[in-house]
Image (cartoon, rainbow, N blue to C red; front, side, top):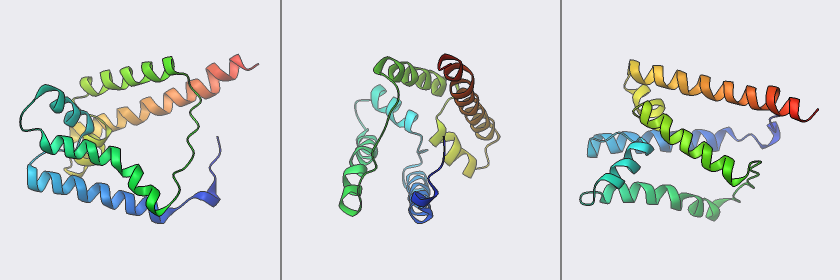
Length: 147
């Protein structure tokens, strides 16, 4: 894997980070809720009434790529996995978020900004698990299968 430094855009990355920070701060300030995607979706599935803000939040996530197309081209996505792998990965992520009582957005963005030790621990474990998975898949398993 290599990084295409000619396509690196720190301006858009900074703008995206600022928007995520502002959105999560606004949700906490005005609604008293943490902007953790797994908690928002879980709450949407658990509750029928009082979920308008959850629907608006998820709707914003789904509509944002369409809004981006107004200003720039949406990058091509090259997923090198089949549907069974994607489904298994999604189920494992869902299981992990339930075990960790939150996801990377809840712990990594909101929890760390509140200086939560629990969120720091969860985020370090998320990152270590991701690093280990990529190393295992790219260098040990797939490398051995390709030879």
